[in-house]
Length: 192
Image (cartoon, rainbow, N blue to C red):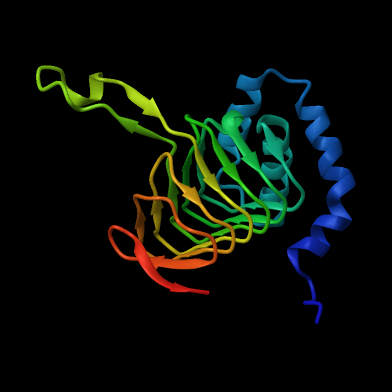
């Protein structure tokens, strides 16, 4: 049964305009596009979602169709981000792609999800942790994944296709395909 007014249908109607906007944005230097993307973080409604999509399409390594970045999301290093199609990133998410981040098709990140792709060095006790640098750890969220509200995915993790990350979970290890994980640290709960 087809749902009335789904984002996919709205996107299909607006796709030519959004792709044209993305081409226009590409005429500007990357730093300008990134700044404009940041400034549109709190723009409300479908207009905000559309503008953020067109800007992200002009910035990201890859950006598929119908990518919905809701109001209040922080996306750091969007130029190192690859997104599939039909991706929804809900309000208050924090996406840090400094080490490289790939998000597949049909992925939904509920509100306040954190996804990281780096970690701090901290072994030298004689140097403040903040001054020891970071390790870039590419992360991947495969197709058809649902990440529940306030979950955290640490850098270097691979989230298998068809998996579910329960609300509030902290993912410190890879997640097998078609499994549900929950808890801190996240552990196997069940197969789906």
